[in-house]
Image (spheres, helix red, strand yellow):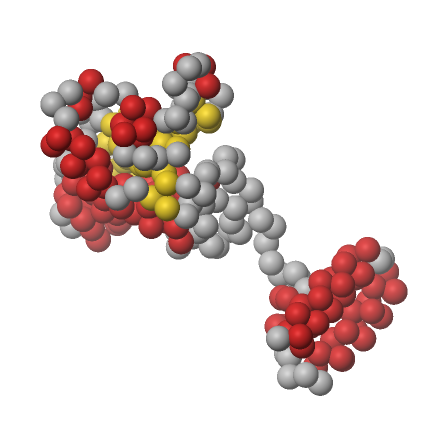
Amino acid sequence: MTHRFGFTDFILRARHAVTRRRGAPAVGLLGAVMLTLSGCGYSQGAFLYMMGFGQRDIVKAKFTLTKGPILILVDDPSGHVDWPPAQKYLIDTLSQELIKQGGADKIIPRRTVQNLRRSRTDFGKLSCREIGELVGAEQVLWLQVKKYFGDSEFFEPTNAAWFAVTVKVVDPLEKEDRGKVRLWPASPRGKYISVSLDGSEVAQAKTKDGIAKALAQKLAERLAKVFCDYRPGDFEREE
């Protein structure tokens, strides 16, 4: 254990020293460290990667979510989604992406809201803040559907299916000041996020259900990037 921490400290110190120097001194120091590590069984490529060469810069999250329970709510007041499972797929895939990418530690299960819906006759009158409070959330990711089209028959090959939402982060514990309920973004309209599939992706998905899953996956990845620190390439699909 001592040896491992010593090695990590050595790499960090070496990286810092190399990045602070310029010209021949930096090259000489880099070469000396590479010779040292080559005797320990490390390839030059592995060493350079550990030193940070070849790694892309980290893209910072636009908003950092709480480490406590988070509720994801998808609202479609205008009835844009003509395939209801699409909302379920979005919640499930976004939950998975946030956990996998380190943007959240705990997501309240979708069935918790389903149980609340069955037990409350006034559920339709509850605000997203009230729903979050009732299920024990510390924050609510409130997604409102703005556009949806996911049919196997399409007319535009480059934009054959689409899914668009606005997202807001809500504090369900704030009851006194309505102006503080929305934590992010500053705009009351929320952050607009949209994705689309081209004709080949729609053909590969085949059915309305397959298209809904593909759109939900793509949108979930886009949304997770808002709340996660990441390097380009961390997500399976890059824009």
